[in-house]
Length: 394
Ligand code: TGC
Ligand code: FAD
Image 1: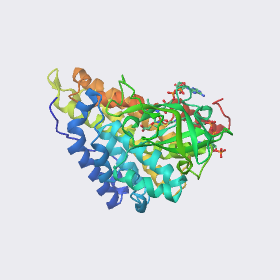
Image 2: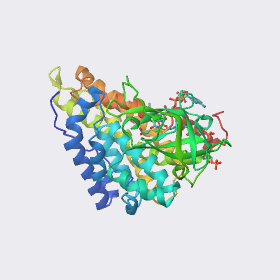
Image 3: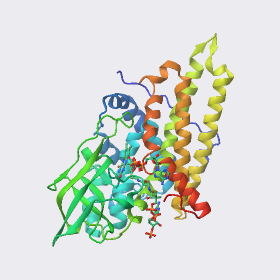
Image 4: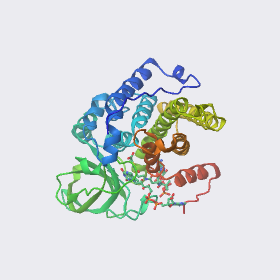
């Protein structure tokens, strides 16, 4: 397939750019330009071939997309959460799998090493991860424990200066290419800890997951631990219990709230342009009320979500956002983005199912995005519990 020109124009119906600083806009525009130049021309082909464009790891590192809120001295960008959100929005405008790579590296690998790691762990891993020299992955989900990670069975036992790790993780983004994995497993007392597992460790393997119809340009795999000897200095000392991995998920879910809107913005923009160009019954399809209704509703939902994300970003930067607010935003963005992509796909008629346009790829990708980092149901139950005080999970 020939490489394509990216004609994206960002919808900003309520002049939200005025809420951003000059630095925010510079960062947003540099990621947008990168996506236009280096992602949009190639991503459809990679997705069609179900291949991970491995070169983006270094590129995203150079662009500062890995761990933007982590301090500079540890390989991050010392930026605020609006800057981080804008980066995720722009990356996912290109492809959810590209944003996934950055979410996992920054929020699920660098963040726990920074937040819960020892000084030695921070110095050893964070600069390499921040620059994209190394890729990381995050192992929480298991074959029999997805929404309910507290029931995980992956475990380790004390063996002197090291521990012996056994178990398996499933559905792990970046796994087939990762040099390091942050893995959550139970000790002999049944308490959950984070361990940094390196690719070379004997008994550790990362089989690739094949046959996905979604997130095809992102590499997904398993993590298999067969009596892996992990040095004790690789255990994250600063946290135990499920709040360790869930704390990382709060950061990553925040990035998804922005990212999914990026995919929706791309689909809206594509459908708007198509509606002005495509003629049927002697006029552009955009002149028909039914198509205008779709576009008007898409833009309304995008604008509401942009405002919600911006406010959440302010609260995150001030350290006042709750995990429950993050759940609401992640859920809302995924829902409206999924609907918008479906509407856009219909507006493109037959062309909407082809790789000539990005909408079908976004639509398929969002089926993963609405599932991972907590399913749509789980986030609804988190809000339900927050407002009623009743736990409807169990
Ligand atoms: P529960 O008893 O509610 O909580 C256990 C402890 O954790 C604390 N906590 C949180 N802390 C920080 N952030 C959050 N979001 C938190 N949610 C809960 C909580 O206060 C408690 O602390 P403490 O001190 O009392 O111990 O736990 P539960 O077992 O009842 O489970 C609750 C539930 C269902 C909401 C949770 O387990 C959940 O969120 N399940 C969904 C699992 C999930 O999201 N998995 C994602 C896997 S990673 C992934 O998908 C990456 S995709 C990456 C990509 O490619 O972009
Ligand atoms: P299940 O938990 O089995 O859920 C099945 C259905 O039951 C869902 O509809 C769910 O909403 C519903 N359900 C479950 N519990 C309840 C309840 N209490 N009340 C009502 N309904 C309920 N995980 C990682 O650890 N690291 C990764 O990097 C990672 N990357 C991923 C990449 C992709 C492409 C995908 C698809 C998944 C990834 N995941 C990753 C796993 C993801 O987080 C899980 O798929 C997700 O948490 C759901 O778990 P599950 O698939 O086991 O579904």
